[in-house]
Amino acid sequence: MSRSGWKKWNVILKVLIFIFLCWAIYRQVFAKSQATDIWQSFRQRLVSEQVIWLLLNVLLIPVNWLLEALKWQQLLKGFSNYPFTKSYRLFWRGSP
Image 1 (tube, rainbow, N blue to C red):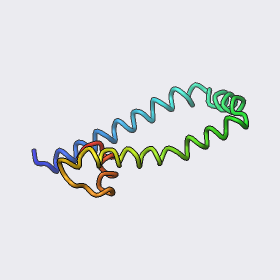
Image 2: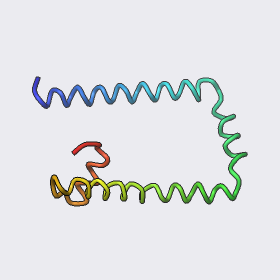
Image 3: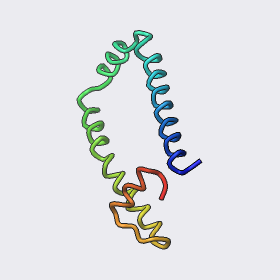
Image 4: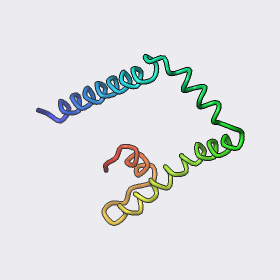
């Protein structure tokens, strides 16, 4: 099978896995009518002091991604000289 044929099957498999996972999450949360209970529990536990920590964590996630990309750029420097933009894309893809 050609390389493009494998890529097509790879995409199809990823889409099927995504659909299955969405269906499984839907069954676990929404089909059991627990969505409102889960949301109410989340809102009760989320007090103003914790909102600051939650927002701080959400804001620091992209910083972590940038640091990970820089780390991989430095680790691969001995093998190939990737620019930062390519190392960032490779970080998201998971392989060089």
